Length: 437
Ligand code: PLP
Figure 1 (cartoon, protein in one colour):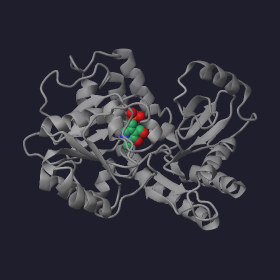
Figure 2 (tube, protein in one colour):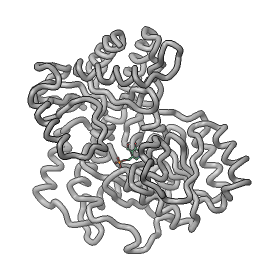
Figure 3 (tube, rainbow, N blue to C red):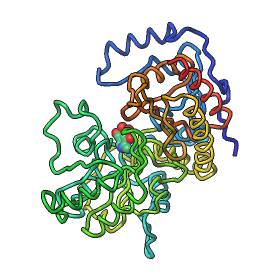
Figure 4 (cartoon, protein in one colour):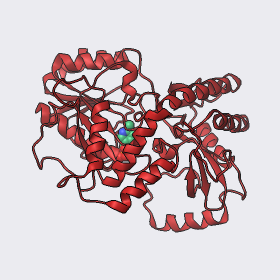
């Protein structure tokens, strides 16, 4: 499979104006005058077009993108196969609402996802039922409703540092940053947050919370990210997910795994939870599923998704164009991109480990596949958010697009089409930036 999908853009950064260029400055001024101040634009990138791992701004500057639009464009920017699927579907049918009507792209995508769901095989039917939404938050919102509906229990356990979205239910599960909650209360009741990723946290849940304040027979679900994303690309301790599964089995609690950021091949498996061989009850998806078109999904074991007609639906969820993009995305993931994510993840992790060995303020990398992060530290070894921000900012001015996450981490979540040459180019820029910050 040919991975490089850059057709007319160079495959390494090329800056032709000081940044931001004149057109970028003009657009930013227009945008700032009228858009919500709640957006968090870190550096002044004004994108015009993208191909593969490369983005061109409105002034003709070309950047190497290790953000994939916040871990979304799994197949790269404007992959020709995805674009063709979108164009064909758009010319045929833009919308008819899967809530009330049937069309093939939605049924086909549900079949594809159900066949691949990380659930036990079922002898007499698909291994999952699928509900389509428009975003990660909406998928988690629906999963929260489904968990309560299926168990008729009110309580939910979620994790500190977790990010599940910003609508009320999803925000109530989120335990990431105070600014995401401050001033918005009251939230959805019944959510208890515990620390993420350690057996000590699960000891606390079982030995302290269950007997004292949180009767397990009232808990509907434990909602967990396989690798914590916005929280810092935190990989949990060995056995963490297996132990959550055991706790759920012991008490009739549902295990809900949020694969919105880690899923769709990014970690070298279609679903990140497959790394641990654990079978959840419900999985939520969005981001990479349709290579950039808005789409989310809830996968549930079939005996759980029994809510009646009208109990949960959404006009745009499962839009035919988004489903066509997702079907094409899945074909490309299977045709080599999941394997590439694993291989290129090793190349990137090796390169980051070498950088960490040379730059004392950089931690060794953590993560799986193309979901990797390093922390930035100060001279005393403390996490250094300012230094992280300076690195991300300076990298932009060198033509390399990065994103932060957690307290002081840089995350690396490139399109899964990235190749070794582009990784080498990115590491060379990062090396220079780290030396200068
Ligand atoms: N869940 C996880 C793990 C995420 O990383 C995100 C977004 O970053 C969401 C949910 C929310 O997705 P959306 O922004 O599409 O609502």
